[in-house]
Image (cartoon, rainbow, N blue to C red; front, side, top):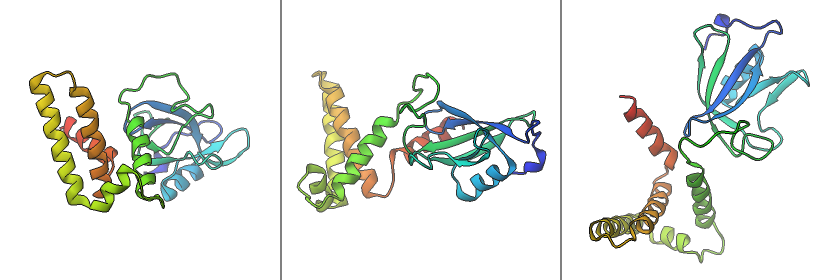
Length: 199
């Protein structure tokens, strides 16, 4: 990104709108200086210029709820930035995803919570959970379980037995386990779907 194109305000700052890459929700508004933009690009973490403290401020430097940059765009008037980012936890200090009251366009938070649970149980020293047992059996058995759950979901839909939602939830959960075993996350699937929808 060429900062020479930017039309800075009187304080040599530019407003930056932060958008969740995956849900498309607007997360917050902050201000950036040339230095904070350069640091953001270098670290791939959203870094603002704090007008109250008059210093660079890495979002989440205290809480750990950082914003990982996926894309930065300058608007047509060259006086505002749109930053698409992946949040590592709640963005707002009140504990919510967004500093604005918005409804999720796509609620991926449940996937992130489940992925965190799956990762924790996979790495648990106790190793006595159902998820841990799946990883112990290996990726072939996990894949077989996904096929089994897909079959049960299809049968439930065809027979109209009223269990299609339950079976679908089982299928999605086991798919998350398979993705983890393959080194991927649901956001990778979402990114692919977003790519396809824009074609």
